Amino acid sequence: MDLFTSYVEAIETGAQRIYDPDAQEVHTGIVSRAAREVITGLGTPDLWCTEHGSHIGRTLVESRIVLAWMSTQDEEIYRKYKAYGAGKAKLNSLIAREIPPEWLLNGASDAIDEMSRLSHNDDLLDYVSVDLGSTFSGKTLRTMADEAGLLDLYRHAFQLQSGFTHSEWWAVEMECMERCRNVLHRGHLIPSLDLAYGGVVTVGRAWVIALHGLIRASLEILDTDEEVVREAFAWLLPSHTTPDPPPDMSTSVGDQR
Ligand SMILES: [Zn+2]
Image 1 (cartoon, rainbow, N blue to C red):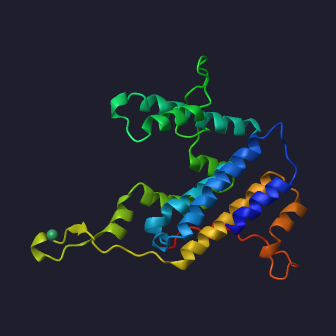
Image 2: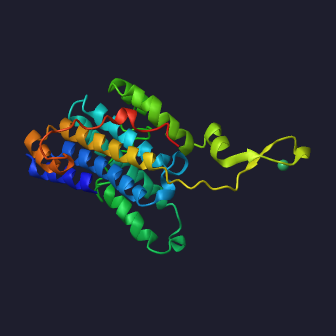
Image 3: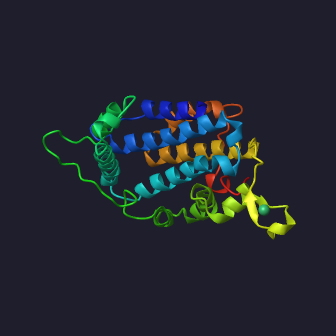
C-alpha cells in the first residue's frame, strides 16, 4: 500500500497533461489493477504459493510487458487500448441483454447498465466498434514481450504461471494429483485431498519487488520528474541519503513454489 501510495503521490505531484490524459490514465489504471491484486494477496497467506497465487504474478508480468510495449508505439496506442476495452464492455452488455429480463435478479440489470455505460457508446449513435481480437494490439503477449525486450521475463515468469491458470497437465499433476495406493488400480492418478497451505514468504516478497519494478518502469515511461519521484519514495531509502536502484523484476517472479 505504501508503494502504491507513493506512486500516486509522484504522479499527482508531477506535471500533468490535462488535455492529453490517456497515457497517464492507462498507466495508473494498469498499475492500480496490479497493486490492488498484490495488496489483497499479501493479506491472504494461503495465496503465497504458485498454485493459488499464480494469477497475481501473472498480472504483474503482463502489466509490465504491456506498458513496456506500449511505450515503443505511437501515443495513439493508449487511446486504442481504451477503445478495445470499451468495445469489450459493449460486447459484454450485448451478450448480457440476451438474458430474459425475468431471469435478472439481485441488481443484474443495473450491472448490465453499468457495463453499457463503460462502453462509452452513445444511446442514439452506435459508434463503438467491437474488436474480437484476443488482445488490444492484435499481437500475442509473447510477441509484445519480444518486441519490448522482455522475452526472458515472459519465458521465465509468465509462461510458468499461465500453466496454472490454464490447468496445463504438468501443473495439475504436480499440485492436484497423487498416485492411488490401491495396487489393483495399476498406479493411476487420483485427485489429492491434501490442500497445500501457501505461506511461502519469498513468493509474497517477489510480488512486492515486482510491483516496485512495475511502478518504477511506469514512472520512467511517463517521464515523471525525477525529483518528485525521489521525494515520494524517500521513505524507501535506509538513511534517506543513498538512493538504491530499484530491484530488477526480471529475476524475482516465478520459479518459486
Ligand atoms: Zn485407484
